[in-house]
Image 1 (cartoon, chains in turn cyan, yellow):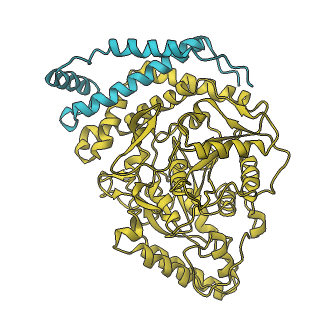
Image 2: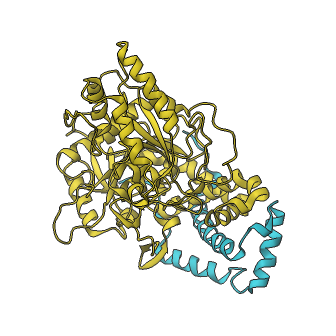
Image 3: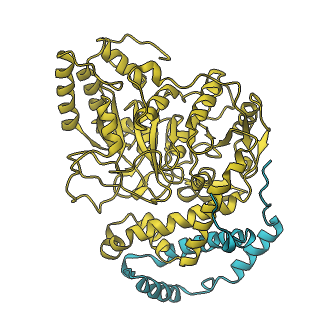
Length: 87
Length: 468
């Protein structure tokens, strides 16, 4: 078996997931609010809002947020902010 | 060669090197070999081509046939792939043809001025490109369900997906349209369709094969490789594509089965939600060899998440300007996935990249006590087209994004992975469609994969899924 550090516990993961859902800033937005929100974000990113479907975009953003939290968790757990590649 | 045929006409079941062998010994002409395939590819009946073909390269192929026929008549020995037809995922440049990458966006682009580097290597060895093949638009997906070019169906049951994003490449081989094809694999796009169609595929070590002339998706993860119907073909094609082949077919044979390598099952994440028959066979395969029974990859879920974030960010960035100016031309299923990638915070990408660096520098620990790992490629048979989901912990998740849950984490490591079809007996209650495994080793140890696959093949664990 290798010597890597172990993952955060499953219960911690579940709690993180629940917290992330509770904190989803878009979870209670109406369709119109969602449209306005993403219209603005797409414009900020230099994209053209009329080409996009806010509901589908929202689903994809939620998935990426979920994955970002997993990435963030491991990054912190391994203290990668202080890690330098020695290979 | 694994089989020796003496045909006067080609057959759909012939493997690539068998065709070359017959052409060299004069029992099959180059013209017959290619015309037979062109006729099959040009069929307008969708049930005969599985929605796998986007363009038939009639003119290109016939020109090459004429040249090769002339050379053979002059006594020039053709290369090791003499007269073997092959197809390419429509993101490899073919001289004289516009590369679409499965999109409408590029259909008016000028034709490519030369072949992609790997296509040229195969052509130099005597192979003849005959078709471009369907894919998820810009290779972003695991199902080959394309709004512009249609859905690619599984040749073993048209109600099921072929997998993706190199689904056309896998279906064309599994359906007997071409003896081999080329695909690309960013997060599993060769391995997933190879598994679901019951054929062989290789994702070589990241950076091992040139991507020149291949339309990119996520350049820090992209690889290319062959898909085919036999292990001998897979090894020979890899040797030629890697530029390390010798001229005689015997040198292209896979390494002899080995008793010295240590082989283990990759457990944890890779043993969850897996078809019981597949899991049982993986355990049996692992027990044949020395080495620990099981090895686990810690943090698999987070490693996969990092690959997901990097893919979304790099893919979104690559397409940013096209999305802004021509967003209406994108497949609706892809457009908002790419846009979401553009909206990600930079910090998420930076953390994911750091995780990748850490994973690549520490993955040697994974192979400290073993040489080759075995894992499922997909957890189950191909999803139905009318119910495009995969089941994970009792939850139905979209197949387009989640069919690669066992392939995507390995991509981040850059290690070579060989996808092999599980031998499935013709008995009641056996899986009705193909299942596949992945074999992986340290970077640049492709030979280990071929040696272990060769042994498992000889023992009857691995076998191309038969076409009914």
